[in-house]
Image 1 (cartoon, one colour):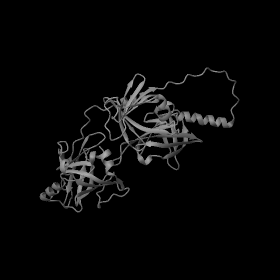
Image 2: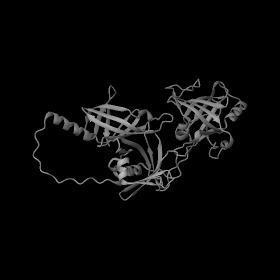
Image 3: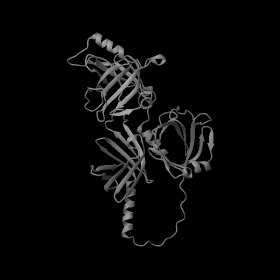
Length: 445
């Protein structure tokens, strides 16, 4: 529910000892009711730019305050959210409580400062009402500044003016958010299409905004040997120019028609696209910029700003005829150690899962030296997604497993390297840990 909360403002008296009169309450609500736009935000001590709010958290940075509810839309899903609220304008500073559909209450304070509405509330596990309008690191507070919308943008739609709540005592509890109009893909459907995508592909053709790239140009400028690799969470190609690897995370929705895919680059830009399977071909059409709409057809004519990729599953090269070789000499101690290291590397390849205080981590280790990880948070923080994906490269040597994150949906993890000492490994379990931290046990999926 993306902390449905986002923001700000007004409802019924809260204080035990100081309660507003009906006139005070009515006047306070009238100041708050209407459309507002987020102009500044500080989350747990970090400033969040208004553009990030508009593109990822609250569509256009807009929310509408009604008599008992606050409504807003998430930009990536287009879903409307309703938050209940109540206020006590008789207290100093004035108090506001935000109420989610699961009856979670986030205590806060608010004030009118010139042309702005300022709201500060706490989103921590044991939330305590702020006493000041500030958000310091570790405070679990969100500080928002909003300005009233005027002109044509001040028109409020019927969905935005939704004010239905269930009163539980004095607490206005909003209804659950409406579900998508179309069915959502099941985990089994997503896993099936990821399995179909996984592997090495030959890039048969690329049509870029009306221009077709030939096979030779693709091999020389786009991808070494004209090949692209898709993992369970990421896509990678090797540049034929400088041998660097380019990585993208991806997510899919096979329940959509046509099936949808989003590519996320290292800068966290999301490129919207569609995909389909055609015999042994995978066809993908992607918009070139994250501000562009998702394509609706597998076309990339001039002026469309779309790129159409046609991929064909790569066939393994034929094996050479076996040649009789003399029996190898007895291995040296160094060779035995190297062989043991290689056996451990092979045992590491696969999907592993562990559960800790943060939630569940599933890591997929591939034989080509890449990995992808999915962290499902048990208790995500405000504006933090419930699932974090990452990808990168891994190595194993001298008992140490090293991983370097080159692509992730958590910008704080980008570029990080992790080193864990391997304690034991079997076909079904893995025990390792880093530094002085606790050992973790992973089970093979």
